[in-house]
Amino acid sequence: MDQDIFENFPDGGLIKTVDEPNGELSSAQKAQLNRRGNAIFNKGDLETARRIFQTTGYSDGLMRVGESYLKDGRPVDALKMFKLSHDQTRSEELLERAALAIRKMLDEKEKE
Image (cartoon, rainbow, N blue to C red; front, side, top):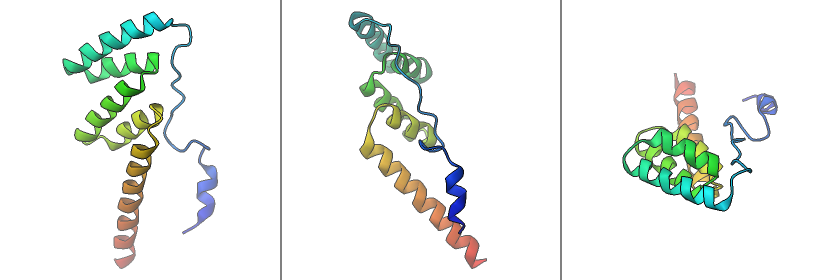
């Protein structure tokens, strides 16, 4: 395989992880939004909760959204949430699984 193709990828990889928390929010505002995000998450509205957690940078909330995405069969979206929450362990685990899947597909393609 030509390793040069990987030089075209951005340093952070192919997943956009530049969603920075809003730095203008006070601690009290973040706490209030996180409580609201948790209530919304518990009602099952993952997308609204995700937007709130990304705005506040609430890593625990982002991890829970990522876990839900993973259960729903959305591993790429889950990986983004784990990256945003700085959960290195879960991020690496998903990346290893993706690499194994790609390796398996390539092996099957070579056997054809």
